[in-house]
Image 1 (cartoon, helix red, strand yellow):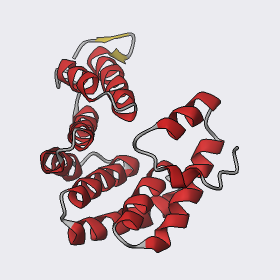
Image 2: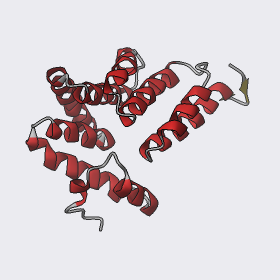
Image 3: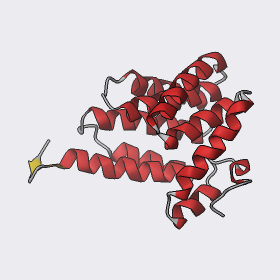
Image 4: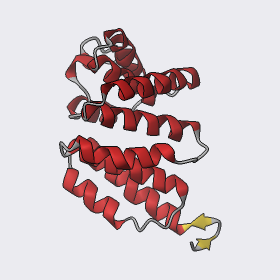
Length: 182
């Protein structure tokens, strides 16, 4: 990895490519997301490896192939990267992949554990998807928690991010029914 003036160029390049790929997934542009992840050469360290696992899983889910999402989600979840946020997101991504693939018992346990941690740590951008998937798995008591967390996240977002969220295929329209930010 080349460093110039304290900047790790491989990490910076990976951050840009994986960030753009995540944006593409959020907009439902699966092919674009695949191309961007493929451009990342894998030379940026453990944080990038975890993020690649998330993206590969999310791309497979967006493409309608939940079984293909499980292996990269498990790889990200198995990482020992020390960030609490990364560990929780890895659990949420794996839980969503398992739920989509019909592995509901393991998904519920994993999502419930990570929802508790996300709530305790104030990780609202991870609370709402964990609670949402649990609600979709029949634990409807989490429906209100998902909506409240998303509304809080969106209240602190810029107007463009709110509009993108409202149009996103990943955000169910019922989460906007009582939005305080409208």
